[in-house]
Image (tube, rainbow, N blue to C red):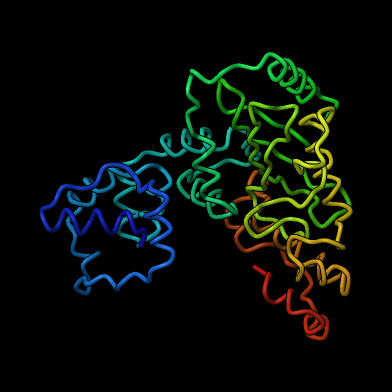
Length: 324
């Protein structure tokens, strides 16, 4: 169960006031990672016995992402949330968190779609960061503004196929981007979301770019970090634009660089057994990057793909470790 939800539940049942907001202190977060947490001393069946009125009080303190976590605790909690939070709320939340999400199929359950978009993402922190408010007193940079205006113009051209990006705030600091999987690659048909932070020193310093959508690739870490030289601060050149950055990442999907990998096991699989690599990468694409084109049930179960022979799997442990 979500830790924050559990703390609220115990506080309300004990008569204490619920805490305000989420835990943001870095030192406390580090302590939670380092120190083992004692098992919650809660009587069996407590979750099922909590009255709906109490649960609704708890849910009122949650943001949309935490509310989804609560809805996935059990069927009863999900039914309570579904009865009290209408579909248009989840549709608005989806459009706010993923402004580039444009489904080609009809969505009947926006709660499940919102939940699936979160579960198919590498980094929950990045999703929260995209909604951060930038202080108005931040100093504006004329060179940065001029360059970003040019970037927006280029990104808006119809001739630019396969990549798209939009700013998420008036300071043009947080951005969301999408890359369409290249034709002929195991990522073909997939739509991959990325999170970009454009520093106020841009274009003299590179943007920070991470994959949001899970992708099976040797140059993308399990946290979404991208191993590409052009966006490293020591190598970055100010003539590069956001468009060129996205196009270079897209080309990486066709030609992985396996001499230096973010995930060495995946790189080894690519070099030793490319067929197995492409099989797993294709499965990941169908499962995590086809939400705009396929019904949820199809995305979660995947398509009938020819199984990888046992002899091929044994050639590398990576196929078994990474296969979703």
